[in-house]
Image (cartoon, rainbow, N blue to C red; front, side, top):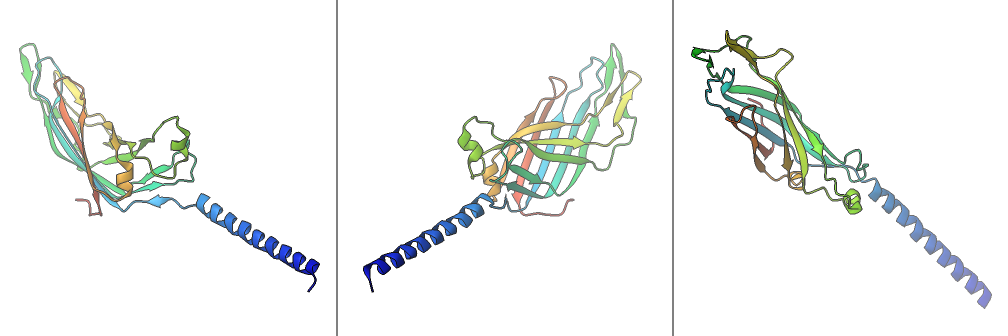
Length: 228
């Protein structure tokens, strides 16, 4: 075999190998860029709220004790590394939700020397709805945070109640009160939740009056259970 023929065949072989290597690299990169969203194991998220407020004889129509419990199940957290960071890469599916009151006690109402016992003016609902959503993701200007394929360590979750279209009212001849919907924002360990770890958050609530004492407790439990 002549030297010229050998060189030509060797060159052709090298070109074929280079083309195969270049071609095999593209699908791998495309597959990496199009990686599907990651999902956490399902959770049961239980929210407990407790408020106490003493009787104050200044004419206010206030709540003495309020407690309720909300259960979301199944709750699944998602992270899409390929999504636009401006549109949000962290998502949450909350499943079914049910909230129930365990305490709803009213304070008396007093103006001057006149003190009256307050009563409910509308029916109290047997249960109610609530919402759980992502308030915001990390807002660092560091570009690496926006392009990272690792879920953020923390996110901010918002939690709110929906007591229905009809107001829950109470009062007396000295005044009336209305139960307004409640909302709070908490920081949650998103990376731990994606990994299926249990977590509990106790978060203070600032009430309408300085004397109000209230706490949110949010429990993230891997696995699901039926709402009670």
